[in-house]
Length: 169
Ligand SMILES: [Fe+2]
Image (tube, rainbow, N blue to C red; front, side):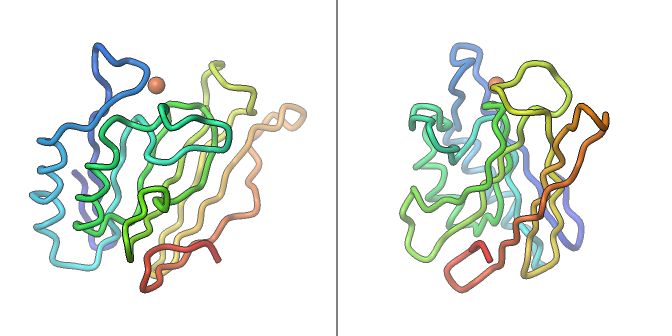
């Protein structure tokens, strides 16, 4: 757990020895979020970091979602988690939690591609830069350009907090 006056970041280990591909969230891990985020007095943006994703890029079946994601999301919503960060699929994606259909709740789900390894899924290597300035979050993907031998930033995607959660603007 990391906390400062702007953000609170909680990492949950979703990898399981017997489920190396899919991953899972436990009931105990979900209970721990109340402990961690419950102690926050300020208006920090609440961020949950996992290896496996809570939303998927187009073309991926639901079986790629982290196990027990619906149970976990009900509780994340109660805690007002704002942002989920994940990797695993090696595909860049900026989505949200609308697939869970929780009334009045919509958090951002930002997925990182492959930053430095050669293990990709056909995408060029990239990493995301997130800028958080309440009530807005922007995501800028920096993608490797072979000919320039450098990472080049994209046009950032902007999101804003509304009464129904986070929305693209
Ligand atoms: Fe993985």
